[in-house]
Image (cartoon, rainbow over all chains, first blue to last red; front, side, top):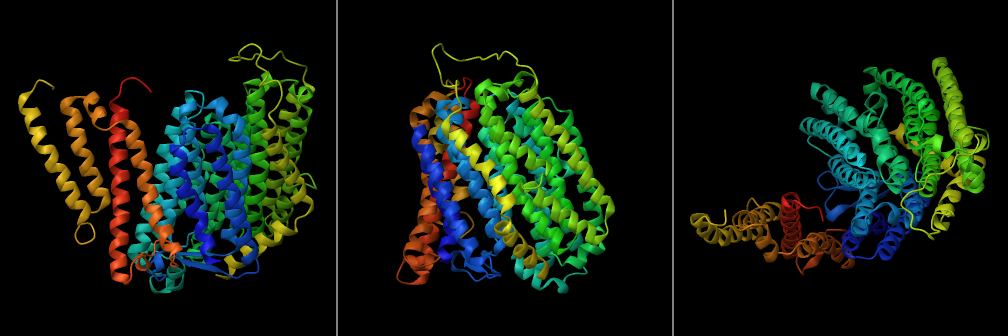
Length: 496
Length: 139
């Protein structure tokens, strides 16, 4: 049983170098899908084990915890691992037809290897209980995502990847400085150990500085409002598969790290005194309004979705800076819900890109009538993004509103309502252009005559899209599973 | 620089010594400062010196790129393989103590093999990086 937890790390670690050596695109794709499926199975099994509040503990290399690296899995760890590997399945299903059309044949094995390494890094962040180990996994996932983004079709992908590289490295360095300061003060890297002995070094100035450094670094990685500038370009110019995977997982995992730092590593009273909740709450509110407003302005579908991501990250920040059981639950449940919604929408955008070779909304006019099923799934996910009752988006917003009312934060209530109204605006923009505007003649390039590949959407892509869309409804009606996992995770965080 | 006699002769003399030193750092990694990472970088510097003096084509003839890619992947596999072996033998991942009959011998074997994997990957990747940047034409 304990050995299963480490397999989540070991399987991608062993399969990725093998993948890099196999020159066949079919086999490498299959290996990637298999890795995602196995990781998903293992993480759902672990979640099933720990959902009642127990822990699974794994000591790496047989070294005892305060000295060695310890993986301590509670329901939050398992929940995040489940999200990451589940989105991995959707993204790799989508990749089957999308990757050969976007990436040079010779680099496909390397693409899949980097994809698996990115999965490995994100899973590692989700599982580890050691802050330096967390930094290492953060770097693994970031380095591979820089490489993945730079493989985009358009040349702008290189500059997008480079600016992400610079900002991501600054973020990681800040986090490392914070870890260093904390290590200097406490003499330990183990999260549980630091938390236990916190009162013995609480008075040091260094500890406060460490907290600020770590939060700044991770906020950059999570694209929280003033530090979001790398995100739109990186998601727009990345290959579609990478856009799907990263938009749904990378920022969510960073939010998870933030939760761990604030609620597990540091005592809650410590940073409440520093006025951090107020600061983060205002950042979150501004992010919601600003992200939604900018999304309304966009004329390109992927960029619109990227700005909407910034707004949705704002909701998560609002959730955990309310410092209550309900708010925290809303934040954690939104990790899951937003991952589902955004991956579905990005898959939809990817199909449109595959068929029409563009995601400019003005060139997509009337395409919804041509592709009714794809359009229907996009519309469903769009409704979830707005938060219509019966979809996952509603679940989050309901709990978030409840938490805000409970705390008497009316400004937050207003922000959420305004954010939802703006969301109607930008989702309508997509629907309007795809379905209600009169048809535009498509300009299709780079297709040899007699080639029917882009005449219909590939089956694997449609399957991935509809799995996402159906889950958006399923978890909107049947909230028990995600709510139970999220609330038990929130309870565990608050108790610590 | 291919016509410079001094450079050519010095490179010929120096390269084996650099490689020998790399191997020394590699195999003393478990007792003294050093280990796979440093050894890999030193090893790769010997090949960089060779290719700076004799040209990129000669260096590519010495070590083809496919071998470097294989080496880079193989190093990771060796590292992970040690961990998986210790799991199969009943310990935790990367628990070297179960690799041999006594824990101390096991720790020795484990760290030497791990460092070998690290050295292989680092050396291959360093040379690969150099080749990628020094090549004018894209592949």
